[in-house]
Image 1 (cartoon, rainbow, N blue to C red):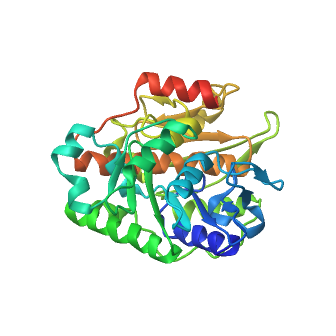
Image 2 (spheres, rainbow, N blue to C red; image 1 turned 180 degrees about the vertical axis):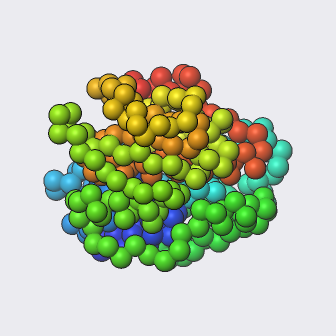
Image 3 (cartoon, helix red, strand yellow; image 1 turned 135 degrees about the vertical axis):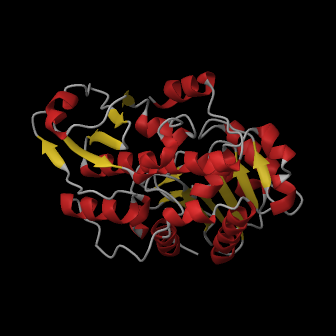
Length: 342
């Protein structure tokens, strides 16, 4: 198993809509004893083998590539389970929605027993506590763990078997909660065959393929501010998640979107210059009550990433509300994310 196989795997997972461009990480134990792991802050949908990072078992980086910030829990798992050869952590919509269920609701429904997977209590990404919580959850032949307010992680000896197990459980959860109709609304058809490039055309086409957007997509560069901006209407926000929308569902949503500014009115294209003045140095996301959002980013990828995570967050909330009672990240948990990452 090597970086080429891992990169192809991540590409397929992304094309299938099972993770976001900035969400998740994947690793393997190489024959030379080093850990090969996906990098930090690089588009997961188009990773190349040369993008991957290498670590030794002391957590020391080998080479120039920076590893995922969540490499500590990968190392913890390889140390605790010497037989495993791969670790996969991704953010499928259904698993993330399930991870939002209040712990009481989750336990009352007997989810772990029904699907035979573990449950890891929330901890801040990259922390030793998160690694400890995850390792504890892998017990009694469990090979897939749901991470509270986060996503899913699976381990094993063969990459294809690990991925198949996640996909199998994903379908079982959809069936159990009768989510077929809503999940079908967000299912991707076909693949985006455009080669990755740093152009507006590439990201506009990618937006239309991967996101629930029906209207025209146009990325505009505002040289005065050095920003790229777009205004689009998200079907996921129109379907009813607007009133319940919050970025406080998982760390990724909060760290990428912060706290969006809500406009309790319909979007007016003629006033776009007025809205642009509301952006400050932290780059605001403006959400209107008719599903429109005005978003800006420091690069084409940064703009796309925000759009994708906004759409992902709205979809997760819609799905989670059909499952049961949900818990958002607490104020203290959000504060810790701010202190560590922002």
